[in-house]
Image (spheres, rainbow, N blue to C red):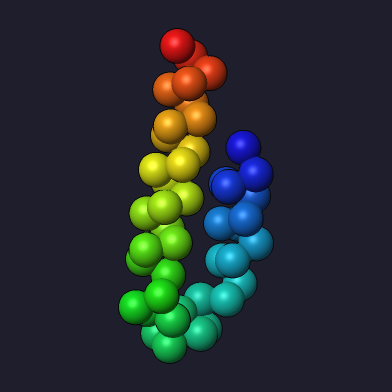
Length: 44
């Protein structure tokens, strides 16, 4: 659940999104994958 909150807190940093463009995607994918796996574990 905290992953979504972290993403929301990172939203104000969109100004520096261009600089971290090559750094954010992996973290974003990892956060989504981690959250999805948690949801699957909880539901199953």
